[in-house]
Length: 245
Image (cartoon, rainbow, N blue to C red; front, side, top):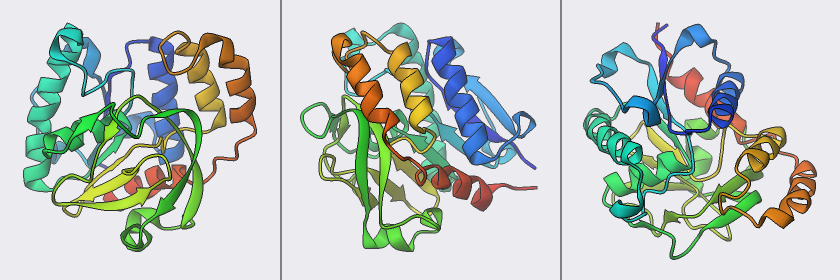
């Protein structure tokens, strides 16, 4: 089949590899069925979307809403490249699944407001609620109307971008998942993460501002008691829906 394009932005090798392995596992993909690009290393080359079944953008410590003078050179480079690619994705309504940062960059591209003013969530579990539109969406097949997912983000969409459909929300975060046009999706929560994945990242991202370092053991204990079994279906459904021979 045509491969899925996996775009990553995590400069820490261990975290980047862990995210990739989770996408492969929960998306039920083989390495031969993807093309992986680490955007933080060299940006995004010119691509022909016709060569791919879909695009999946992962998360990372970068924040869309940070001032330009606070962003690294590699973030400025890959955000410029990603904006260029998103222009084509939006024009063609090309299959896209953004995870965490992948929602922020899409929201900004669509003219939405992404900031740290409201709706940030500490690392841990959150109860996600599907909207009526979410309940009817194919990507939510097999998910209950209410489920637990893992989150951890400093910024968020402050409202639903114009033209987008809200598919999921939570008590602490207004925009948990959207669809734009028919095939462009993004989540604030992590559809590629289970308890073990978050615990791994808690260790990797110690001292990155997601939590106080002296709270790490308590956070790990809380996460280990979560049962995260539903969000990963979104990845599986995305791959199943859009894979092309």
